[in-house]
Image 1 (cartoon, one colour):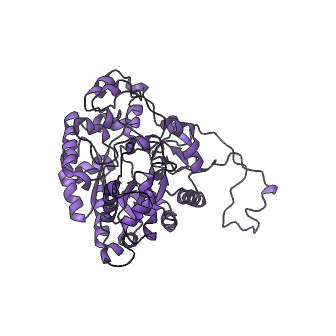
Image 2 (cartoon, chains in turn cyan, orange):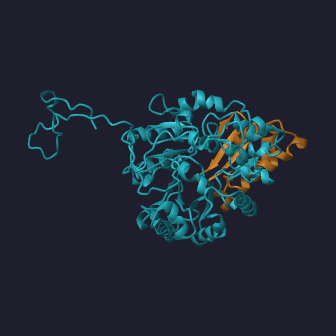
Image 3 (cartoon, one colour):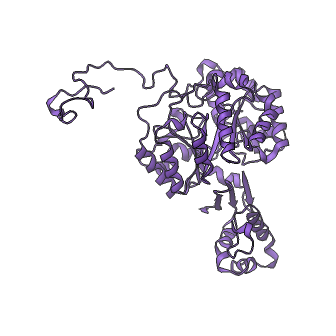
Length: 410
Length: 81
């Protein structure tokens, strides 16, 4: 939610934001690719932990840097961030260093004790993911039993007195008719509803065709959002709907690389959470630090230049829609200077029909369960048995020079 | 408050609201409020006269409404929180 305090004629704020800021307003930080679930539309293709994920120390270094840059808060996600054993340590470290935390969770770890701890902190906000207002609709996307898990987490938060936590819904063809029901759930728990757009990112690329809202549903969604105004959060994700009429509340701006970005579990910095692809990789926090990547990467500097909207620039909705979502275009194989695949003027559908769907770029990484995460596996021969803590020798683990070094550690 | 080329960004950790100060003059006024007995004298010190003060007073009132600006003298318990 934003407030504008203006005095005198100034250039539009959005135009200034398009030129980028010295530090992001907020950023998404995915702490792990590990997840207890396998949602069909997962934007980061999460499932298995990546062995290269940032260590606790490296995460704290990032937090120190965010504090120096005066980044107000981070949206922590994953994967399921709470399965990291140092999750609460990192949350405490961030808030002690004046970096607010909002984290997204499926609720699996939000028991009564955790809910009480969360309710006691001013600096931590929680977002429970729920993609259906009924178990039937939710579990079809998020997995069996996940509706019940989320409801239990919300009951625990409410019982602990946590007011105004968020319920985060990815809008799909199957839940657009449930918007009032979602609002009723939010009202019941004293929570706030957050609706975001389904992108063809991560595993979402495989289900986008079947799950993205129909043209009629987009209008339905827009009308609902207008009627509910600022009480519903959208993460600014529906600015492509502005073509229906008045812009929705919010900045109505693609903030990728300009006011937002993503740090992924291994420290890679991408333009936004929906663009995990080499094309949108700006750098890694382990190399020169986050501030350097944010301020000097060629990718981000390029995104802060005036962008060409191609034919869209002559459209009546251009001022607010700005050609829509970069990730939605990219992963459906459409040109970035053309219409959004869900363009409300219908230009997306026309353009989509001319695109070869098999030629659309695939996400760069896949951490889904049952999928290899590190490309080709190289066969190795282990010539020394690994040391174990129960080894009898007091020199276990110390006398490496005396034994052959294992080749190609797994 | 975080300085920016266009003015400043403000974030309230309690309300989780983000606000923008859209020019450097209003930033100057907000930063100098501590040193003045009231808003008008802060505006005068920043070179804002009677004719020009309306938008600044409005901007400050928006900040008060959203709890971004609170009194220091404890006159109003709600604002002090």
